Length: 250
Image 1 (cartoon, helix red, strand yellow):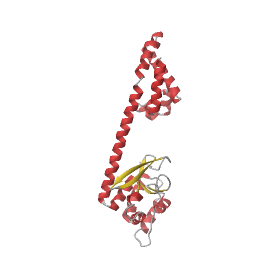
Image 2 (image 1 turned 180 degrees about the vertical axis):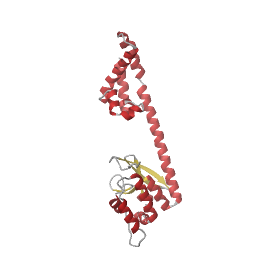
Image 3 (image 1 turned 90 degrees about the vertical axis):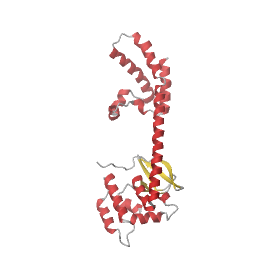
Image 4 (image 1 turned 135 degrees about the vertical axis):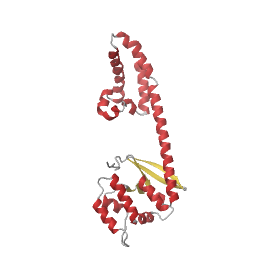
């Protein structure tokens, strides 16, 4: 199955890699990372080196293989025409021409506050790194992997903090139900569970605007994985939830 890597959001987060004292920008488009080729060759021949790389037949074959794998809208007919043109003295190719002619999504030209230049999907950027030198490519991959490992560590830490916050007053809340609400009612064990769920949903409605059941019906796949509405709350919401649990316990 092809995986379409077309950006799903216009919001882009900028990160920086440093390779051989060169700062290289990364823009996240949707869930994909695009690395700035222009930054990679800023101390060399700049955009001319990118154009020379695009004229190379091996480069075009690699780009075509990548697009066929990830881009269902890739224009194969136009790609074959480009391949036939490649190798002649008159053949020229730019990122803009490539995108217009083939509908390619692996490279983009950017202007504006996020950083101007030619950006390529990380797979393509690594391949371009080899055009500069094998050492540069290896260092680029190493620095990228280091950056991603730090992101994973940060995400794990945030998840841990979120879970701790979500549990801060949970026991106080449930103990209050157990000690004060349940004794007032003559209920079976199954019916007691509904009381806990009812109290939890009072807070869910106040904070999220929906009950746990409504969330599950809207997010069937996540619910099948055992996740609930509170698993997707941000830290601010969890802090508010902890306070609501305290107030409700009182």
